Image (tube, rainbow, N blue to C red; front, side, top):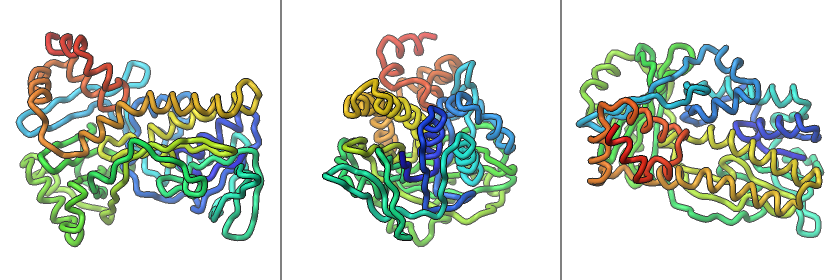
Amino acid sequence: MIVVGARCAGSPLAMLLARQGYRTLLVDRSTFPSDTVSTHVLHPPGVSALRRWGLLDQVTATGCPPVGRYSFDFGPLTLAGAPGTPESPYAYAPRRTLLDKILLDAAVAAGVEVREGFSVEELVFTDGRVTGVRGGNGVTEQAKIVVGADGRNSVVAKDVQAVAYEDHPPLTVGYYSYWSNLPTDTFEAYSRPGRGWAVCPTNDGLTMVVGGWPHAELAEHRDDVEATLMETFATSPEFTERIRDAKREERIVGASVPNYFRVPFGEGWALVGDAGYSRDFITAQGITDAFLDAEELAGSLDEALSGKAPFAEALARYQSRRDTRAMPHYQMTLGIASLQPPDEQMIQLVSAIAGKQPAMDAFARLNSGVTSPAEFFNPENIGRLVSS
């Protein structure tokens, strides 16, 4: 098995495969520890995965603070609630230099062969089937299955011409950095017409602040991003006062991302994480999705490789489970990323549950990925929340 890409999808997948006894080669063009553009919020379902893998203690040992409260500031009112479950009550936002190294080291500890600084230039095909990879250094490696965990610009997805569906162009552009003297123990989300931003504590006493606006305005604000961020923050006088007293400690970085699902398997290959499914960063679901994807794919590959099911059948189940889990959150993310004012129905709902703690907790669990939008917006559930 070869896994291309060693970050939040690839390292866990390789680790899980190795723990099941499969010989696995994990390659990445980067060396570790290293940073990557990421909002790096890990919601409670992703934290649960770390606990299952025995890695949560290593993440908490970095000093990354637990986040047990989410708040959603809509301007006229704010909802605040607990995002997790009794078993997994907290979110975390560890820096990627720390998290990715923990994941990579766990793969090594499981017996994975790792090659850092290995850039895959192309796949190797035999009779139309993927049978290996060829690196930029001229080295070719063979495998029964090659998995692309190499992100949105996946070489694997490109070479196999993976078909996209439910795809949409970038909707927002976001920029973030880290501030000192901006204390919070909450994941704070602020929503304004045409603008949005979020705040979350991370390592070393710093607070990540990420803000965004419509992708259509990318060129208009590209030359003065910091000024546009400050204009955005000014729509909340309270937050403006807080950040005025804070100090930005690192440069501002940003990105915009396309939205798509890709068919995640074919003859001799599979996709996991952003290589197979990408959504706007505004709901910060990327790492959590990558973890859950890795678990699903590891199980399906085990079914196929152990002979319990044909490859196509096992991987079709992986695609079905992935889409069933992710599609409702994907559609909700597209709606949020439009940065449009809430419709009358949403205004009525938010107004009705404001101040009702059980209902606000349920709203936080919706946004953390604990609760499916289909479950949350079920009329019977809405009725219970409004009357609670």
